[in-house]
Length: 184
Image (cartoon, rainbow, N blue to C red; front, side, top):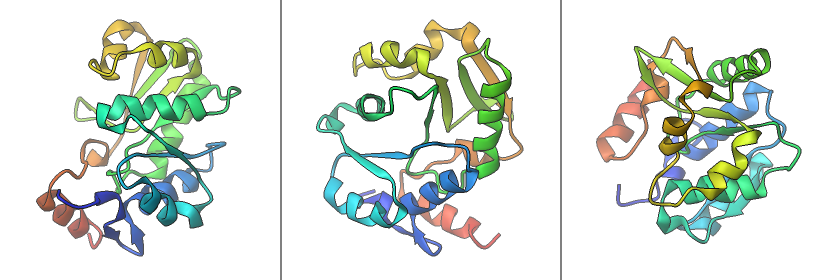
């Protein structure tokens, strides 16, 4: 986008602030870690009022998997599940997070929980902590999707009634589109 999208204004807060608020509203997560890289100090200052833990990923240039791995290293060793949410999906709903957690609690035979809208998988994703070592061992060149290909029998798709799980913000027109949805 040419600018730090996590800190773009979004409603009464910033884009990352909106995502954090949603995760907090879900009231089913024991800790929220925000992994930062580029302009990490600036993002850390912006999220400080939310009372989250900020983790700096020194390898952020290696891609999103490196940030997921940094978050996993910092997460409580007692965590039974790991929710991976994107900082550029400000319309994610607390109900989606709650549905993933509910499925996680009800289906111990599965380990990867993905929201699905109209047959398409989106974010956030919830993974059982038993995948921690496997994720940490992934090379940055493959991405987290390789885990899905390795363990397809572990996946439980959770149908959700919104395409919010599919939309993120990568371009200026995406940002304008999502801002327009604030008034809908």
